[in-house]
Length: 143
Image 1 (tube, rainbow, N blue to C red):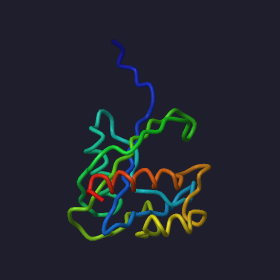
Image 2: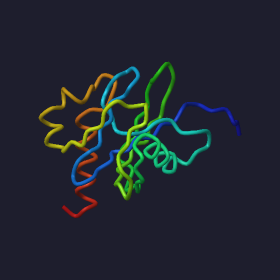
Image 3: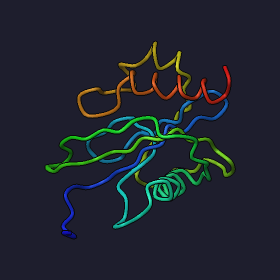
C-alpha cells in the first residue's frame, strides 16, 4: 500500500445559530462570502479539523451535527476533496481572525433573496448548497 497522498482535503461548516447561517468574507482572493472552513492538517480527523478551523476563524466552539455534502474538483491548481458539515454553536463570542474581513448571520430566505450579493457559484458556494444544509437542519430538528 502506498503512502503517497492523492489530493488535498478541506472541510467547511454550515454554521447555524437561531435559524441563520454564518457567512464570512475572505480577506484574500478569491474575495467571496463562504462558510468557515479550510484545509486539514496532515492526517487530521475531518470533524476535529473543522472544529479547529471554526475556532481559529471565529472564536466559536461548535458541535458537528451531520455531513451535508462532499465536493471534488480542481482548486488552486490541484485536486481538492471538500467535506461539508452542518454545525451548531455551543459556546463562544464571534471574533474574526485576520483571514476574514466581515461576518454576517443570514437566513435561508435572505440568501434566496440576495444570493447574487453573497454567493458566487463560479468559485464558491451555491444557493443550492445552503438549501441542502437547511433541509437537513429542518429534518434533524423535527420541523
